[in-house]
Length: 199
Image (tube, rainbow, N blue to C red; front, top):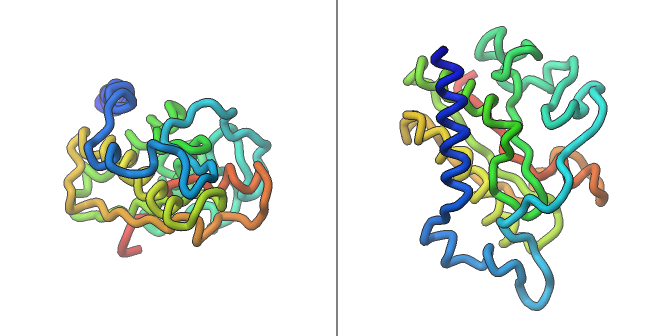
């Protein structure tokens, strides 16, 4: 029951946050969508198709990373629930649309599960690592990765997760999940990784 209420609250929060932007976001080039005359990513998003694919080891099943290796479950050291594919805690990657820092509805149950875990374990810390695909300038992609991490953090904080439980970092395009210069690679690289500390 508490988990269902958390999912509902996160859905309402996501809807409210999608219509809001902070002053910091308004003062960046992110909303303008261009730098030095070239089209870059913007945080508006939602016009592109979502991630799709077939489940293979480390592949995609709908929007969630699934597979059979320990590399697929970077938080497995936290407990068996983090490597059980039927448990939303096993999902440690939140994917984003092109040009967007908006959390997709598909990932609300995943975030809710991590919120519940963090609330039940107040001494546990979580790093939210934001990433972008290679399109756009390096500076822009660092900012976009940061905005993505902040979007996930905002949803968690609204549900009661403490600031001191979250660490935000952005790698921009520097640490791609996969090499490649096509849509398939870019979809995997637009992400926030949820990495528990002290494993």
